[in-house]
View 1 (cartoon, rainbow, N blue to C red):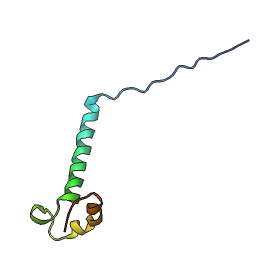
View 2 (view 1 turned 180 degrees about the horizontal axis):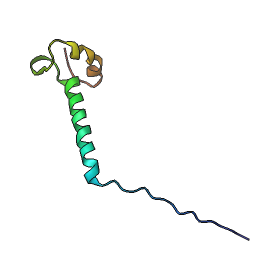
View 3 (view 1 turned 120 degrees about the horizontal axis):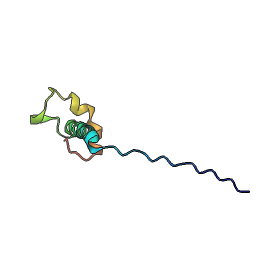
Length: 69
């Protein structure tokens, strides 16, 4: 005798683009802000006085290939 019980497979519900779009925009803005601080926060485009941000991200800047010397 073969008693097979079939369990229904629950499929994940799709996420509507309308709900996902604000999070994608927020993440993109955070990435652009991070890219600015790592790549351009020095010299004429500096938003923060001094070299504090530059020195904080100095090694990451070299790791990502941004020139700073």
